Image 1: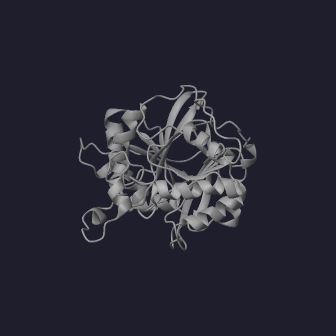
Image 2: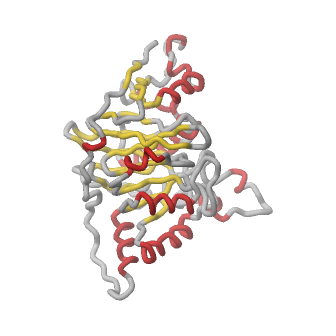
Image 3: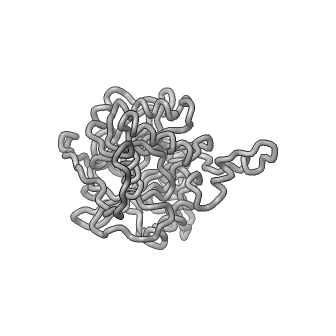
Length: 347
């Protein structure tokens, strides 16, 4: 067996978190708006300007950490083939998503943390699902990303681990190996679904498979390249455990149907909450819908929320137009994310 199997190094307790109040610091172009009645709109417009647009190749400041949404869609992705080939019932969102630069075009949920620490910049990926390689083809060259310094797994469904085999491009051509951080229960699944990556002893000599180092994580903080990562245990359907992750003042929960009581304290003080929101009308047995996701936002009270994991019933422009009204009525800064969204943060 050629892989290294270990246990992730635990970090100090959550009490070590110190709130960072400057997660975004891009300079905005000057503009003016009427003073009477447009303050909420101005705040949202400012937030939009602070996030670089999908498809941009302009580098951010080299002295900043950032997060990049590699994917924001469901397991099958958006658009659906079945919608594009249905001549009797046109799906407006999938038709829009068939345009390469449209923000309704969504691949499997995944986030890249570009952490700038004392030892330099490290690229830490959360999940490598079925469409990961397609995401990497689009965003790695565009944003000047070459290495993958670690992969953290939320759960063992195909939209989170289906792209593990594609990591061979990095371990064969860029770097010697990639550390994988995964819960024991999900590692047991991977022993079956990706047996040839876990136990490489039976691989034909010369076969160019991914070279992965598996590190078992518990539901307690651990450290990757000096960045403290705190697991956020949630339910992803009845009896199925999934993990979100908190790093700095950012909390990421991509697949959730219920948040246990013991997880709420770990979310306190979140500046940015990235949360599952499958559809506009209701929840499913395994995912929050938008109404339930908004209930959780009101409970957690982050400064800013970005929803992810949207299906083809969630039209980016229309839903965001409705969500913008919540800034005026409730002071909630909530929006749908999109593939390629890039946000500078302090970690």
